[in-house]
Amino acid sequence: MTTRKAFPFSMETTVSLLLVLFAVAELYAAFHLPMAEDYTLGPGALPSIYGVGLLGFSLALLFESVRKAPAGADDEEATNLRGGLTCIALLALLIGAIYIVGFLIALIAFCFLFCLLISKLDLVRSAIFAVIWAGAVYFAFDYLLEIPLETGLLFS
Image (cartoon, rainbow, N blue to C red):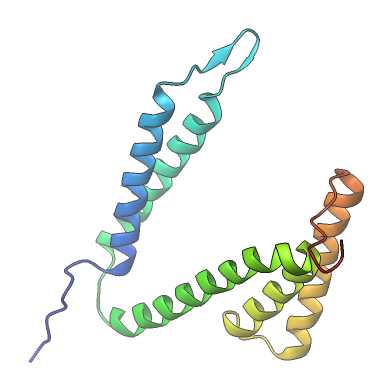
């Protein structure tokens, strides 16, 4: 006896459909902006480029998710959903922590927890990766681009 799912599409198909709709809405919004002004790109150029890219990739994802066989997809979808919700929670934590402890410490905490919870790395490797990645981001922004990162309320 097979059980029927409450929702007829897989999670991947649903997300790809939402991305297609978002890309179409974004392209519609960018359509009314000028593509070029004088000798430079106008305000509609970059959203149009991103919208076309998003539409193409989301259509490719939709095609692959519909073509793929759904055998044994329930366990994988539960794992993907748990990982996706964890990722969204970590991103919300990162955004909130930036204003309190600053970008660098928030990024270290985010990378550490992401490696630990999502990538399933051990404590030492997660800590090493988080510190190296945050150091690389700090070096790229502070020294190469000369853009200071947010210091946060605790360190200002």
